[in-house]
Amino acid sequence: MGPLARRLKGQSSVETRSAILDLIRSSGRVSRIELSERSGLTEATISKIVRSLLLDGLVVEAGYGDSTGGKRPVLLTLNTDSRYALGISLDAQHIVYVVSDVSGRAVHKMTTEGTGTSKPPDVVKRIASELGRLLRRNKIERSDIIGIGIAGAGRLDSSGGVLRSSRKASEWEDFAVEDALSDASALPVILDNDANCAALGEFWSGRVPATRDFATVYMATGIGCGIVINGDIYRGASSNVGEIGHMILEANGPECWCGSRGCLEMLAAPAIVVQRARQNAALADRLDIADEHIDVRRAFTRIGKAAAAGDEDAASLVAEAAMYLSKAVLGVVNMLDIDTLFLGGPGFAEAGDIYLQTVRRELDTFAFMRSVHPVSVEMSAVGPEAAALGAASVVLHSHLTPHHASVRRAPHTRTESTR
Ligand SMILES: [Zn+2]
Image (cartoon, rainbow, N blue to C red; front, side, top):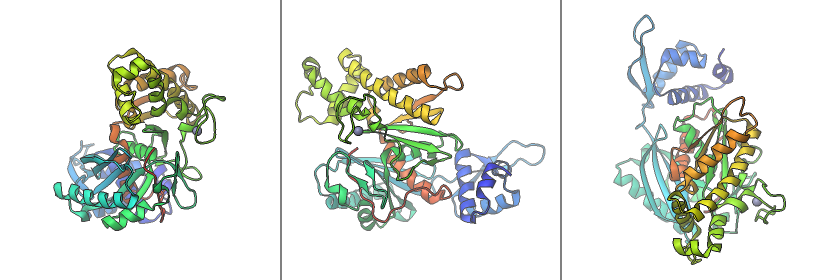
């Protein structure tokens, strides 16, 4: 009996069906015989499941494989246009919308004004109307949308999946965005942490095999880490896993808003890099970021661009932040013994290469298991839209492959709008 068959022993037919659908998804194109070999299920069981997936339009036949003596086998693949998922990332500066097909590929994108200081109910009303526009413009029927995923940031409450305010109290803290948007859009809505979303997006896009454990480091305003183990997000006791932003790198370092000292976020988050750049008057003038009215995101973008273009002052500030980040990543890798890591999120948009090279060098030099296996570090394939596309993947993951079953479902889920 194969590992999948062992796991599915005694499971319902719905779970078995979703496991086979997931196997087809992660294989790209695959024959019934290969499905039987990989899952350990009999060919008769596979035939029955495939027939129902074909009937539902989730899977289509896609040519023939190589003959192994007899008839050439028919290959199966996901019917990528059969359904869509919507992913939204909420942010004070931008709201990013992504429509993804069933394979997790972004087919339409839209960016609109951020949540700013608007009241949450007004933002939800606007999102519902912008969603309608996005669907109409791209001729997508609402009935073909499986659901909406929202990527938020902050601390999850273990009782009800509430995203608690991280940095400051905000109106979003006590607002049930999941329910409100579900009412306004007439679609099911799932909220999840942005780093988890980004990691699941990587997994769902098929870039990582279902058997490979990996982590995605996500940087926006703060820094988080989504961890995928056995093809599913690792959630710990309360879904507050991967808070590497609060990994302590200097025992007596600067005070952090979390109550501790010397956390990664206080040494390397974009706001800290911007603060340091402002202390260098010549650099701040050169990049036109001296004015405090220029928000952190915009100032950090300018520093990143300058660093990537070879401005030595800007590059050394980014290099310092990258050094701290690489120390935290080393801790994660040593703890989990993973061999695959991605960097994603808007924080890496401009100077991603500096971060990438620094993290690679750190792991090549210091990872405890470096003589046993290398650790591959790549930029996330989904770039700055990682969280929105990932949020769409969370929907696909929970609806199409519920055998993984750990996607958090909470009746009253709230978010705040900044990581
Ligand atoms: Zn902290």
